[in-house]
Length: 266
Ligand SMILES: C[S@@+](CC[C@H](N)C(=O)[O-])C[C@H]1O[C@@H](n2cnc3c(N)ncnc32)[C@H](O)[C@@H]1O
Image (cartoon, rainbow, N blue to C red; front, side, top):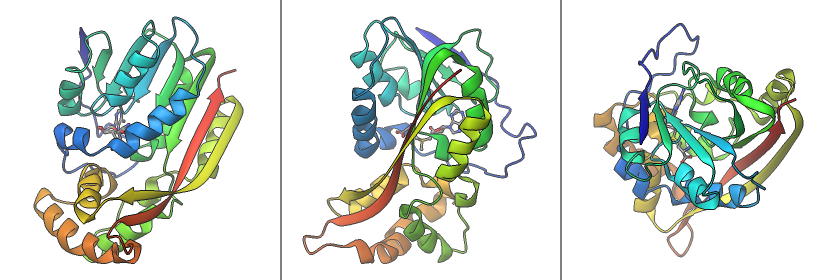
């Protein structure tokens, strides 16, 4: 097993002010991320992998996407990076053949180029433009960059922002990129064949507990919320602002914008 740790230089002059105040537990995330797993499976399931590919997953969290990739392409050489050491510790229990890297993508030094870079985490990055720039530098000629993202304009974020407003907390939404900004940046980076698929979908939760558990998995990446405030935020404010999505069968159906982007290095 190969497990690299990149020194934490999080506040290294990057202009954004996003601070991740709480690191949600890797185990909680693992148990409450079926939506993300299914989306990754759906998108990657349609991709034609080249034999012997070298693949990187950026923002790999508990490692589930890298693990899915290793099952889809057993002969691939898979790398996965996440800035959270607890996530990487959890991820590395999944598969010892994957190279797990603990560090920030914008700081990592790798003497390797990739046939495929995948990320579902662009919207969680402190500086998404730098992430795109770094990703393009790590691609081989004709390498593919595949992104799944929930961009700034996704309608999903609004009820979360409404709930945060009840605590006078402003989210990091303005620091997320819009779909147009991502597409423009990829073109500036000379990536070719940029394909953007935008689709409004419904995220369905069996009950309010499932919804709150899902949100708990990522809320600290979306807003500067203190650990002590998360329970009251979920129990009171999310309960209230999610009421408009409550269905007669007690499920919650919340629309979101799913954006899938494919591009190729020149
Ligand atoms: C909310 S998770 C999304 C995880 C996963 N890709 C998914 O969709 O299921 C975002 C992850 O990105 C990681 N992350 C944030 N900024 C990062 C960076 N600059 N470099 C690497 N990982 C980063 C966080 O530690 C976190 O584990």
